[in-house]
Image 1 (tube, rainbow, N blue to C red):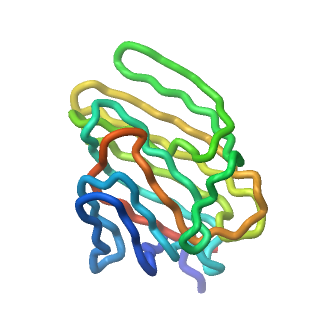
Image 2 (cartoon, helix red, strand yellow):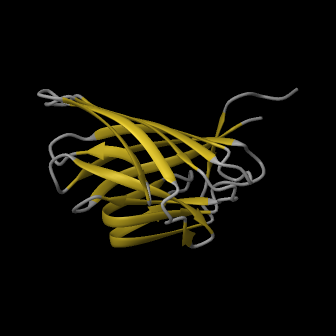
Image 3 (spheres, rainbow, N blue to C red):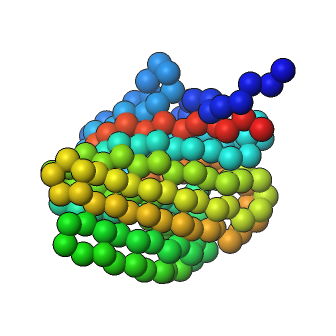
Length: 180
């Protein structure tokens, strides 16, 4: 009998620029004051779809965290990401669409720790990858970042790179495989 659910996955390796990043005993990755973080070897033929859970804070007030898919140590950095997003805080609501060299994964702040949940559909399969993320925080000045994106190349990827749009980020991230 097959058990349903999410399985916490341990990256085969990580790379970072900044102060520190470590893989914990259970497989999640803690990071402090990083300007780039790569999770390598987390997507495989064992799972088609994945959930990534991240909490983070930043050195800047209200910055984005962009992401690129990785094949080994090489980021997919061409203009093959298309995303649509909705951003709302206590004073405004903004919607946008872009074709870029990365996708917006999260939104975070120095005054509010944010939580982000992202679902990735088929990153290891040789087909376009779909990504859906939601970042929220309600500690003092509530905000919401809702993002849907696609990566158009039919390439197999085994990891992901995260880069804040300015400053650095600290927090913890975990990747879960969704059982087939």
